Length: 151
Length: 201
Image 1 (cartoon, helix red, strand yellow):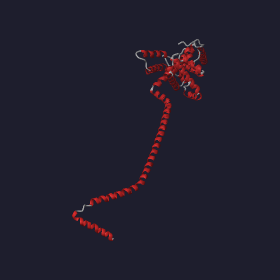
Image 2 (cartoon, one colour):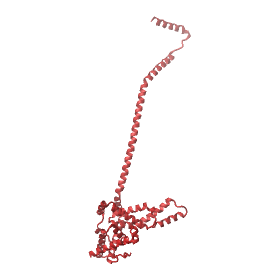
Image 3 (spheres, chains in turn brown, cyan):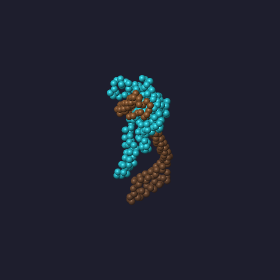
């Protein structure tokens, strides 16, 4: 390549030689660096140089995601907790109301049950009096009436 | 590959049997871009490496350059070559780094950058004698020394010319300078190299 370009001194053999050597030196250095870059070890080194930036970004993302997830989990937990408390309070109130209503209902149902039971027993043990024993039965009734009257 | 060539290909693919879908067009554009990356990556990396003398930083900026190019690929109309366009992005990225993180970046760069002697050790031995090799290394160290003293703009122009071997018109397009200014920068840079070489003799 012609490097003169009409420049003063560029046609000097010594300057030309020095510039040519300089170019050869830079070429050799550059090629060596490129070759080292393509080797696995060099790749690892370059990766290590670039890694911190990627690391920081990944760490920032991970931290951001963790904070967001924690916030979300906290909010969900708080909501569930409140929901649970409300459910317990409602259950307690319902239990109290039920406890208040239970005695009256219990008394009512107890009396009803007794009368039913007596009626059932009365029904079971009562027998129609045979016609032959009718006078005797009347005497017993009148005897009872007399007893009640004297007492 | 020029963008207009890619567009022509895209149109040809679209008119063959049925209209080109948006997905297919994107796929073709992605293929075009992959080819651009494959063919121009070494040059961009080499330029950034020579500018910064820091392999890791050059690697990072090269990746940023292609990332930026990928984002704007649909807007590239092919007014200049893809190489010139990419080089312009690389130059701007390099400028931004120096400008925006001047203090911090300076410390980092100085800490990670290879020193001049180490940089000059990279030299293919070829078929030189040991003496020639040593002489060549010394010359390279001298050029590095001069490059280290150049202004950012002068260094960019110098490296584009003598490392990337770009034409003056391409350098002018990539840097946004006119050709006369590019030539003036190069002339002063070469003068410094010559002076350095003479001084050591």
